[in-house]
Image (cartoon, rainbow, N blue to C red; front, side):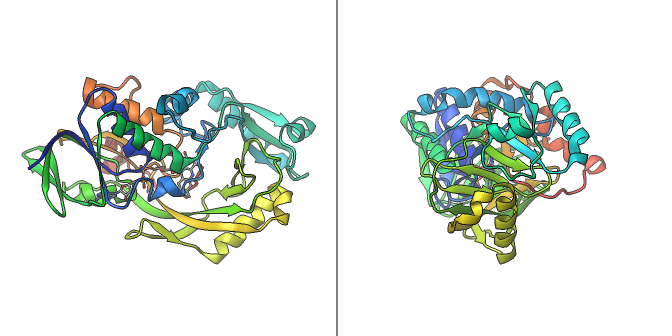
Length: 381
Ligand SMILES: Cc1cc2nc3c(=O)[nH]c(=O)nc-3n(C[C@H](O)[C@H](O)[C@H](O)COP(=O)(O)OP(=O)(O)OC[C@H]3O[C@@H](n4cnc5c(N)ncnc54)[C@H](O)[C@@H]3O)c2cc1C
């Protein structure tokens, strides 16, 4: 049975970031990935890097993540196509102004640099918005990056720092001794480890169910549309309060359109199937907010598989009563932006015994039967 210090199950952006942060601290790491680096949610993602609109429980991580993004490309020695030009959530209904103002104030109280921009000022800031857009919540230091490039860059940096990538291998079970995990079983062999980290996205629930734990993480298919390239116009990421929308223009001029339109997940493939009504809905809503999109054609559309937690906030940390196991999953349509800080904090948890930002609010303990919240509608970006 080969030995390694830490086994990370899952080669998405979360697993690869954790692996790199551990490897750079001298820990022996093996990443086991069944399908390929960035094969699931992390390759399908919209790549929004935002703090705006976060649940208060993950806001400290989102704010700390933005600080990490500032130097991440240099640290990884890779071009991540990272743009920090702002994020605006637009409103079309005058009656929503009080709601928008109180949302902005609540986010400011959490430490976010966010403001409400209205009328001509908004239309000068974001040329191309539909005339009916009245105001928007604006964060200047949010932005976007390329998720597949970022995931591969984390993986390459982890390898440079000594991590091993086992691609095409599926973890089929966990080795358990008493109340602690001692390794994993793959289709070919058993592997011992001092610590196992489950960063297996939408497949995490199945892996922990063997321990008698039921994590409320639902696999959901989320749609993305990429248009043909058009002249440069949009610098910010645009979301909408009353529509399913996340919109950005990429380096080659194409627009990337998401926002949580549903598709049907295929758990075997790690991607999903498109629904014609979601494509039509996304096209209609995006063009309503950004009318130039009436003039473009779809180049590609796809569906990614994401793990949505029952309260749309990730589970990060140990499982109560089970030693030497850490879970980092259920990122609910907005885990890409958090990836640098999640990798750092999980590495601190494993190596130092405590993270520099508390992860208590993200513990699976919140799902104790008495306090389990109602399921919510998924969003993305
Ligand atoms: C369409 C879409 C748009 C999104 N937009 C945004 C956005 O704008 N901003 C943002 O911040 N986030 C966004 N997200 C969310 C973000 O992409 C995810 O939260 C993030 O990629 C999750 O990464 P992960 O590593 O946890 O999961 P994944 O990328 O799904 O990785 C999990 C990996 O584990 C592997 N695996 C599973 N089981 C096993 C096993 N038994 N053995 C070995 N390997 C296994 C899988 O093959 C997979 O590669 C979006 C997601 C989607 C789908």
